[in-house]
Structure formats: C-alpha cells, structure tokens
Image 1 (cartoon, rainbow, N blue to C red):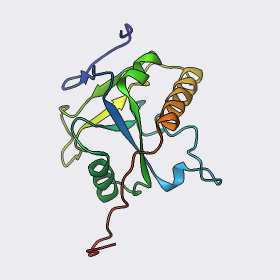
Image 2 (image 1 turned 135 degrees about the horizontal axis):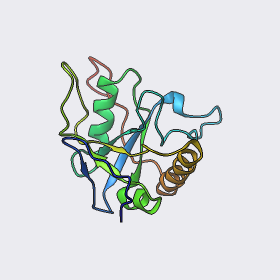
Image 3 (image 1 turned 90 degrees about the vertical axis):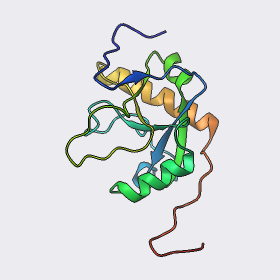
Length: 156
C-alpha cells in the first residue's frame, strides 16, 4: 500500500482509513480571478517543508477546522475542500497524522492536524500529485460550512 519512501518522525503515524477525509482550508488568495480554485492549492507552499496542512475528519468537523483556521491563521478560510486518504494512496502517496509531534515553544497546531506527504518528490511529481488531488476535491465539491462570525458578532 505504501512505498518505501515513508519516513515517519517522532509522533507521526500513517492514516489508513481509506474513507477518512482530510480537510484543506482554501483562503481567498487561493482562488483564480474567475473564482476557481488555483491548481497549486492542494500542494505545499514554500514554508510547508513539503507537508501541506490538512485536518482529519475523524477528529474535527469541517466547520470546526474552518473556525480554528480563521481564528488562528494569518488569512481566514474562505471554504473547506477535501480529499480522502484512499485518493491520496491511489496517487501513490500517503497522509500522515502529525498531531502528536513535539511542538516548538509557544507553538500551536490545529486540532486533528495532518499532512499529505510531498517529501522526496521532484517538481513534476509534485505538480502531478497536486493536480490529482485537485480533481478529486472538485469531484467531491466544497464541504458545506458557514463563514465564522466576526469578533463581537452574535448573529448573522
């Protein structure tokens, strides 16, 4: 099921339930001018160390993951999309739960944090994996959530 390139660090474990979803937060800047999701969003940014952040559906709801992201990240979430563990495995990669890895002093981590492992892939392989994950997410459609309330806002 997994290739020989799996290298787990302290506190990491492979996610093995093929049906479990991994939620990806999509921020406003991840959309193209015509409102479509940009092709790079399911892969790592330059600061991700080839480990783009997702959240486990078995630990948090899509709404909880969006709310946490909007409250803690520099850019709020504009929506939640997802890929399944099985879809990642079909693309010959894996999803790693790193929620029990040691944190840096004053570090924070989203509840149910996990990542799709892009480590060891060359540029072309990363592009292919991002495209595959994007297609899976688009077939599934956006996961329904509500925009988080603004500070001090009681009702919509």
